[in-house]
Length: 288
Image (cartoon, rainbow, N blue to C red; front, side):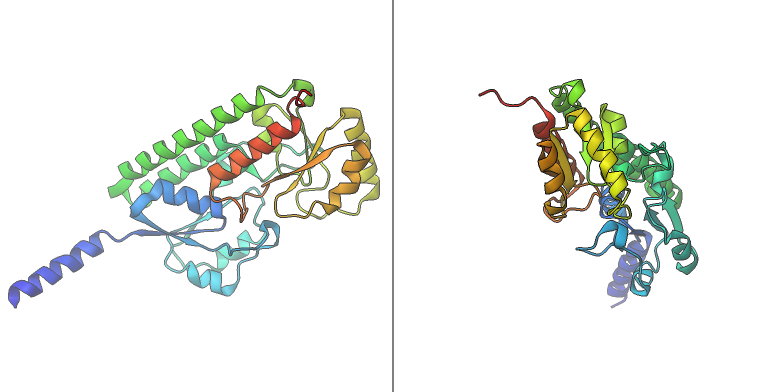
């Protein structure tokens, strides 16, 4: 009996020594990054619910409760979460908020009135954020710092692969055709990385829909640029853009602008689908 008790006590002590770091996340792509970098050393709690639009999400008391015990809460930052300051005040003591977007250089919106907060649409930015995450996890759990560095290295290699694939695909698009017209202003980081000119029809979210004067300016710009394809948000109906596309003789294709798409699982699938649609929409027209 004494031997059995000793064995049980040893098991309990081993489990305590291997206690995982709990991390809460406010975006699915950040959750995926945390699992890749943290591996089995961390537990990730997704606070962002399924089937909710990014710009409409606001944490509820149940979300704060789910974050209880977390040592780290991952946020996009750059103003993407207008509720963030209030959330910080509501979190249990000991939980630090890491705004991963703060590690990424700003990219101005086309109108110069602000910066694009959708920084994840550039895989090089994801590398920067993952490096910061690995460093923070290493501070919280120094015993497994080497494991976090290894997780980052593997994740960074995957982002490098995506970047190379995109550059190769876009090499087939003539420079004069590298005009990326999107439903919302969400691809400025992407455009800065790959040499496209962004033209958002609306603002960052949906706040500028119904601006007739603004739409007239956009329509004039699209005609002048001879745009062949307009890109809508993957989860939105194309109906809102059909009349506009018809006026300029353009096609419509989907892009996952907010990094959230029920049809596509994971960052690599989302990024590759975006690259494919952009290449097919803007690349050389097939020969008859």
